Image 1 (cartoon, one colour):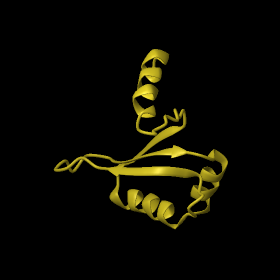
Image 2 (cartoon, helix red, strand yellow):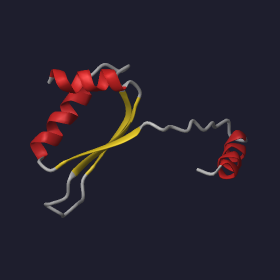
Image 3 (cartoon, one colour):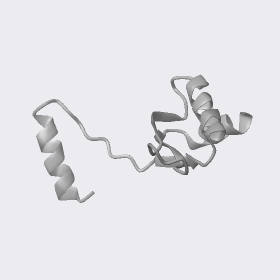
Image 4 (tube, one colour):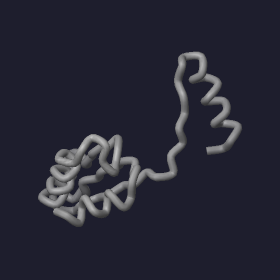
Length: 88
């Protein structure tokens, strides 16, 4: 995001006590098979609150049987994230 746009956004949010924390660690994973997506979802649900990821969003195209199941999230600790998935 351009620095000028970011500054404008920060100024708008400042009036409401909001802050901007730009992240460069957003990851998107997608799975073709529902059972693989369910596996990932269960791993994320069973991980501790201070886990390797935060703000997990899940999405799948409605009415499209070939749509991949996607997860978008922030990676807060890549090593921990890899270990978490490798254990399963």
